Length: 277
Image 1 (cartoon, rainbow, N blue to C red):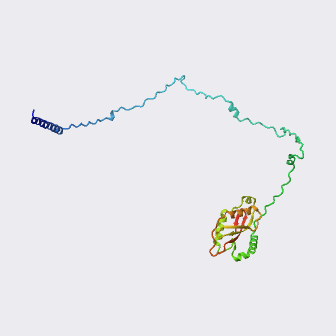
Image 2: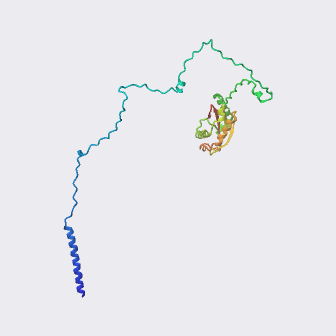
Image 3: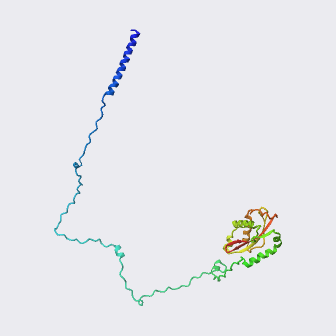
């Protein structure tokens, strides 16, 4: 078989296959499509539904009467128990008149038995009659009056008259324009750490402690001199403790050219209060 015949046969088969595919495609395209038909609705008549009846309850059978006439039966009660008898109110008992009532027998008083006590024993001191308490001595009021405070301050002004004139020493309650801000800062620092001792407040101890405080130019306390005791060591110790806890209160004013500055203050205790002047 020659090559030409083979080629012709292959072409015929190819053309035939192509025609078959085209015919099948045209057939599928032009054939009418079958669509599913919708189901017809079904109508239900509600009148045809039978009525539901509630189940009948079984009736209780009537008992057969023994007699045609109705007779009332007395109500039955339980027997009375012991609790009812105990809780019942007892009948009142008539008391005989006061003249016929028997008098109670008076108990026979027997003297208490005394035990011998040696004079040197500790019990002898307990059985001794106590002497009437002596009146408590009132705590001395050490807080000075206004007049005494004025005299106290005046005495120290005379004592440090020369230092006050030179400007090296001032009083805390003075209206000083130059050291006004410095004195207020110091007063604020004192009230931050100064306390009224609890022991002195409970005992009502009062007094005033005058001190002379020395500052350097940085505002640090370099020396504290107790000018006079308040009469109570606990108050004086609290003043010294307070001054040790105070830090620098700021430098001196620009118009003060000296290296030290002395301040005299009065720490007053009274009426559970404290004041500085």
